[in-house]
Amino acid sequence: MHEARADIHIRATPEAVWRALTDTALVRQYFFGTELTTDWQVGSPIRYRGEWQGKQYEDRGAVLEFDRPRLLVTDFYSPSSGLPDEPANHQTVTYEVVPEDDGSRVTVIQDGNRDEAGAQHAAANWRMMLDGLASLAPTLDTIVARFDVDGWEPATLEGIDGGWLDAVLMHKTFTSGIRGTSVAHFLSSGAEEGSRGYLAAERIEGVLDDGRSGAFTVHHGGMEPGHPTAFAYVVPGSGEGDLVGITGTARIEHDDAGPFFVLDLD
Image (cartoon, rainbow, N blue to C red; front, side, top):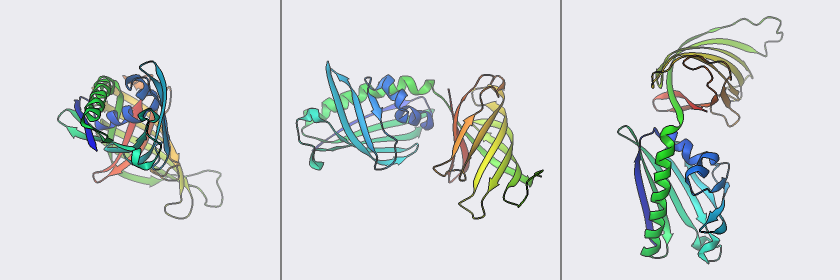
């Protein structure tokens, strides 16, 4: 079998590229109008629907690996191949995103092509897709905001009996993506580490890397940060200064360098 490969440098952060690769509404804008459906959980199905050269198609596959924002691996099968839907006739498509200079290097690898001509045809299609991705990703307002926790202090709760709810006031310093500080009011409940639920309202004030300055509020919560139930969003109407009118979603991530917010602004 022959391998198709295409790559490109994109002037956007890996997080912005990843958002463009996995947000199904954005995918449709640059991926030949494809309507993509999946929840991106490993093992979940993927459906691709659209029209190509005047013909309707519905291709399918599954999520094999999902490592934000570095690696996405999918299984892929197209009935248009004329081959039966058997494992031997499925292909693997790998998307690699690596930080590079002032942006990211994105590589797409598709294996299982039957001959070199097929591999070259697939590579040409991937290059067209990557050109579209390179046009879209730099326009996305995605901020990776790293922070340090400066300290926290217990807060008082009036009218709450039984000790089932705790309150904490936390102070943070943001060191990249946003340079500034925040104050977060946390409410949490649950007795065991790893099974505590929390709600927080966090006011962030500072300067974004693009020079915009001001303040806004993020509400987040769930069964501790990083749990599948976790949610976070920018409160509409909370922006001040240059950030008046901002909205969007957020999530809290961790890596070897520590915790960080990823803000996908609308």
